[in-house]
Image (cartoon, rainbow, N blue to C red):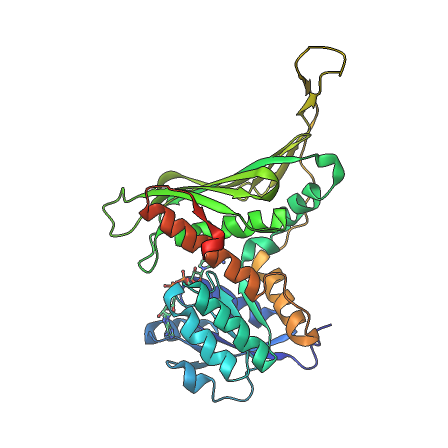
Length: 345
Ligand SMILES: NC(=O)c1ccc[n+]([C@@H]2O[C@H](COP(=O)([O-])OP(=O)(O)OC[C@H]3O[C@@H](n4cnc5c(N)ncnc54)[C@H](O)[C@@H]3O)[C@@H](O)[C@H]2O)c1
């Protein structure tokens, strides 16, 4: 258990939109002490100074790492700098919670895992949706026998922007859904096929359609877009007995279960009849889900792992698994949607 009498000192690198949420959450948790922040942009440090005057401020990560009251570092900069900053912090013996994607190459991610193991510190990735109570509920349902066989899943993550300058819409948004599918299925895809487009005349892809094939013949699909007037954050799971909808923009009914299904009844051995499809009707249920902030749940889990040495649910390997999928997606896009085997990465 984490101990509020001996709080874990936190340093946060990157205080943009998302990093500020970390500063707030770690300031609120009794198990952590929000010690210092680092941002190369002094204007961002001024924003921190106004809201959290007691937090020390740095423009350089190496200077922040000189402090001996920082036990753990959060990396909340743009994707391209995660590896550099996380490796500095790990090499200095600090536990690291890195934002997604862990890195932009598989080899960099693997290097971070090795570094964390060598230093004997925790490496965790901020795949926030795995700490979302609605997603956890869906996982619980999928793991129940009455769900039957999972046939397919699809996710839509669309909105008008916000457009990032460091990565395309696929790298920005799809890691969330890949992390959800990997978590639901306890596995990773064996191949992917993806197409993408630059509809906003942007210099990088802002719309993408991704198909992924998982073991047991489960098909998954992800649609991401920065150019869609409608904000959708939805994941649908279709199984032989039920259909589950996770809707992150509907807090009243975040999860809905449609208890209807199709059962395939095999033809009897002594008849020439074809298989029969039996339709079953049923209720639509919205289970009650306790309100919690996913980022706070994630940060608590990190502190718990730092204290106990337990392996995070979204550990370095889970982060690398997602980077591997993203690299395969990237290659498939270059090949106009050709299937790309994950084993090649
Ligand atoms: N898990 C989620 O739900 C979620 C949501 C939003 C963003 N994110 C992730 O968080 C990260 C940050 O996203 P954002 O939207 O806050 O971006 P942002 O551009 O608003 O902020 C990034 C900040 O990092 C600073 N920075 C960049 N390089 C630095 C360096 N070398 N040293 C110190 N500071 C540096 C920048 O000055 C900037 O203030 C991204 O990796 C993004 O994918 C995750």
